[in-house]
Length: 255
Image (tube, rainbow, N blue to C red; front, side, top):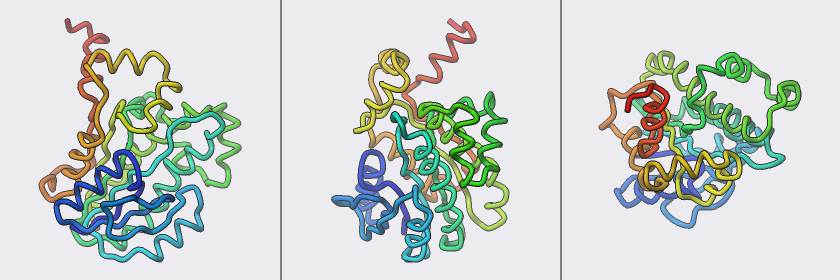
């Protein structure tokens, strides 16, 4: 495969790049930082900057058999607007610009999060974000009193909904799209989630025994990017070590 990957320098993205490279695939990484290894080409890309995205799209060496949109920011104080710029608007702009650079039958994989699992309950706000002109983002955040944690959750809810909404349109173009929703993965940003979500993270990790490892998420992403998953379309795949199941079991009083 010839793969375009955003966020290939660290964490899950670095593991995806390494595994693809070792398997003999070609990887072009689009990241603000240069990956240390595992890629054949690095194209510097700042997903918070529309000019940088356009330049990256111009530099992309198509065609690609898979597009993995993995880059993203965690919830951090003072970064609510940038989180939404990178995690949603940047991802969407890059994805849209890459569509004509994908080969027939190509797979698109968007990294969402288990934190986006409340998209149904928050659908009105998600739809508002999906229809928003990015120039109005600061006003949107202020009017809705969106803090960095809500910005992160909203960005991931929007990715899940956008993935679903684009499925039929992309099928008509010979493309397929899915999302992956990890939870509590042992990367350099895990501490950000402990700070943002408090004791819930530690409690959920304790109940399933440990946090996930980047390679365990990478395995699922690569499967969805490959032809082995050719009949998996428009799905959000939760990879959380059983966290969702134990929480749902409690809620439904199944024990």
